[in-house]
Image (cartoon, rainbow, N blue to C red):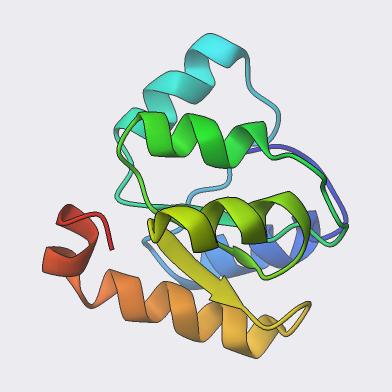
Length: 112
């Protein structure tokens, strides 16, 4: 969901892999429906966000988050243990974290 610098990359990945869906910009109501029906939340943001409502909202719906280890997402995920952090702006490490969680359903169900 959303729109940003990595938009084209994510659209390309969604075409290549059947388990990625890019929704573009959505309303808050639609966002809640999508996240609550998702296995996990990935946040490939490329800026340092001070406080992440996306992470907090995802946690509130019981969804783990994969994000780069910077800013607010880093602090929230480290403090909660409810997700994984990739090395800052290392796309390969980010992908490996997502794959790891996709391959470990029990870990995701247990809240990481």
